[in-house]
Length: 246
Ligand SMILES: Nc1ncnc2c1ncn2[C@@H]1O[C@H](COP(=O)(O)OP(=O)(O)O)[C@@H](O)[C@H]1O
Ligand SMILES: [Mg+2]
Image (cartoon, rainbow, N blue to C red):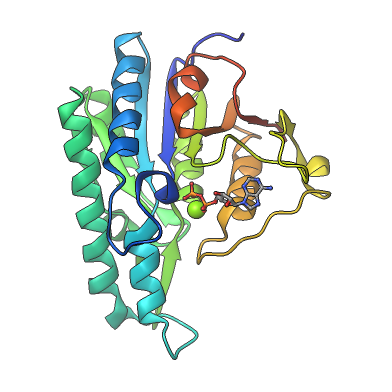
């Protein structure tokens, strides 16, 4: 068992905290379980640099709706998708408040000019004040296009920019699974070549998550992909889920 993470960016998968089979439905039990574990981590002396959540049956559903009969998003699609993600972020903040944390929500479309051009200063300010910055996967206009800012990539970039010690991706599966369905203990660039990973949503599912995690692992000391019920253990340095190494 390793040492507990002194500071961490935590990504709560959209598939973890929502019910993917129903539009705009939160999995309250799972969300609250995650929130309690985050609060427990803070009680144990951990510091949460940011909580980033995915789109699940909120954002991904609205994106799919906008893409019906089209192959790309345009800026006029933004309001419905952004609204849906803001609704989910309120639900996340509600669960965090109930567990005793002090969440402060930041919408990426207000701090990112486009993907890859984001300013994290306001998140850093709130983190320094002892608040828990909450942000999420979003859509941001880029010229005449509307592009998806993936929560997985955003979490990686925040962890790097704000120098978090750990980056933990909580998801509905217990980690990266091998072709027999067993959890892979350590994943690196060489190891992913032989793994079957289907990306089935707009931000690429597990494959894109592993790619974002791998990129982050060059700068972030500890990067883990873990089942939602093992979030606290992962934050406390236990060997659960999949450790991602460059
Ligand atoms: N090799 C794999 N290991 C683990 N999950 C995989 C793999 N291949 C495909 N998946 C799918 O990817 C999903 C995780 O990606 P995603 O749904 O985007 O999660 P999240 O909502 O947490 O971002 C898993 O629930 C699983 O269905
Ligand atoms: Mg995902």
